[in-house]
Image (tube, rainbow, N blue to C red; front, side, top):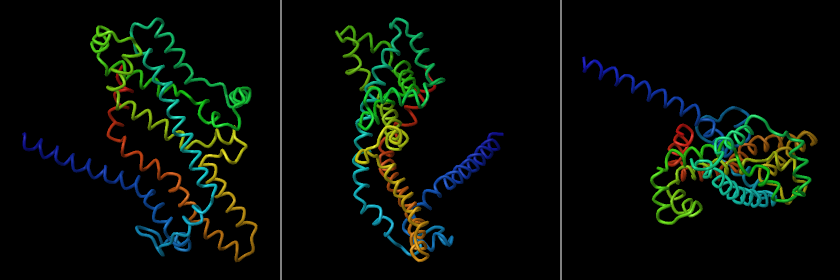
Length: 294
């Protein structure tokens, strides 16, 4: 009976591994295709000759994109918005989540309810724009980092982590040693919360890096444009040039635009792909504990 059970478990494991490999291939191949297509000749891409390796290796698409001065200003702005915005997000989220996780805080459940209620209803795009404009934040870097200073979902995840993963006895020991709430947060809670901090930083940083809608709404000065807007404008400009050119020029521009769009995807995504492995080991632990317990 035990031998049969082991065989069944072994067969189940094999099937599970095969399904997992299939899912990985389905998810990973589009990214792999983008990479090899960006290094291939445009004719090969349009002709459907790209499968598992580049055809006619070429770096022209990257040269065309990276020679644009606007790309580098967009990178600088996006890095600034991501770094500054993530710091603001993390500080405000932590300072909101910690008191709401403490059982001795008055009206804790009522405040949590009102904050959670904002996940169901929002003010809308036009009222938010009017507030931002009324505060004279348009055409400033603050328009990119202040309107979304706290994500309610991220705050609740962090609150649940503090509440479920930091034993109450640790807080009591810190209080006996003379720590106030602020000292307890800095010296006790945060050093024990590396997984959830890494997860929250990843969520906020990726959100800021990919953000473009706020830039469309609040920015008119092109010197402040983030990378995503710059890349979008390059693709639109290339398409418009292709429509308006002569037959020879149009063909060349269409060919160039076909590989440029893949190079644009990699240029915009590469920093996030490089950053993710450094926090991946914390990701599962932080998000599962913070989202389920509490």
